[in-house]
Image (tube, rainbow, N blue to C red; front, side, top):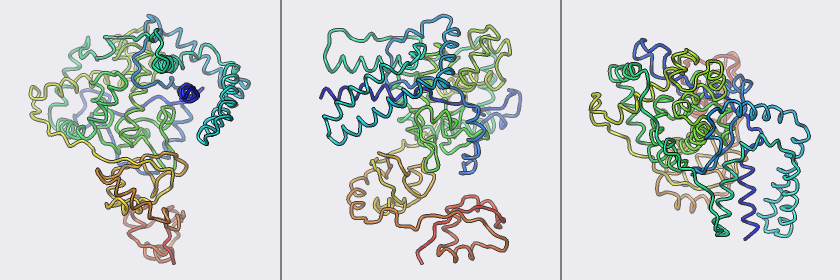
Length: 506
């Protein structure tokens, strides 16, 4: 039992990446000029295609910056950083230490050895080899102690250490409890600005014409995700008003992708998402998973608040990126959002971001006052979840659950291909509500979980047509179109187009 407690401790520590890289969130939420036509103010969101998502990654990741630390849920414990009146020098020190860590070969090697020992220890535990696990745990602690981690990087571990101490206190029932930080100002977002005219202007814009129609649709869509978002925000001890942030980001369109490559209801960039623990690869993009993406966004917002201690600055940083905002504050000598706006120290999009958020919250808090009447929220998402380590064709999943392939894809929007992701241990597969028992019973009888012949990439040649290609690979035109959304946008096949094809069995 004691060894298990130790595992809990080290697992929390290594949920933090030693130097997690991420990119500033760049939301294309609204037009830059508040006097532009209403239809130009709402976000430009399009239905994602794989090429859109993948192409956006290359340039964005080259500009990625260091991320802030991972933070445990329900983390309202006291952090000495949040009481600093002048945080910039400290941030500079942390950022400098983080940059040095990239070239510290000795520390990098030591950290890699620590991680390897931890993985071996975890494997030994899973195999019930307790003797070996204890031996590896002692080795792990020694290596971790000698890893030569720069003390300036302690910032990355504050919340994790407090979580560990809290767990140890609970397990051993010690008399000394971990001090909790009850930050009254940290649990709500001020809904006023010095420039109230700007807020009122956005309320007017959002309350008429096409903007109003889109707002109503977004409010109604939010009902599907309300339970997920509200529960997660509560778990992270975050202000409930943040549940309206996706309206600015995506209008609560779960499959939305911006021109810059931000995706999902929280419009996370690929590098930022990965740094926050989401998987974004060929098989899966968890930015489109409402649960996973909401946890990642909540984590990021928590990090930003620990860094900036002001919710208006947090919102601006979510749009601008934390280091970009800190630079803007330093160069303009501004300490709050009103000063940043007055001194034109931040991009126009970021200047408008906070007033837009306040306007939306005021409207939804009193819809009848602004002519919105009763909002007909959509029903919350309901589904069962089962864990699997196996690669399973989604058609097989649908058959075992007694539903359609389309329904399975709708419930699992993060899946990019025809199957559950390769190399994802413990993947949570979502099934129609109430179907999990039936699924588990039926799937146990299936001998071949991925029965197709796999897939190939075929480059269209001059003279090709769908019927010809379908016959060549023993499949159907309909199946080829289903696996290649690009075909639905063009009447004719274009030479050199690369198609994904799942050959049938001859």
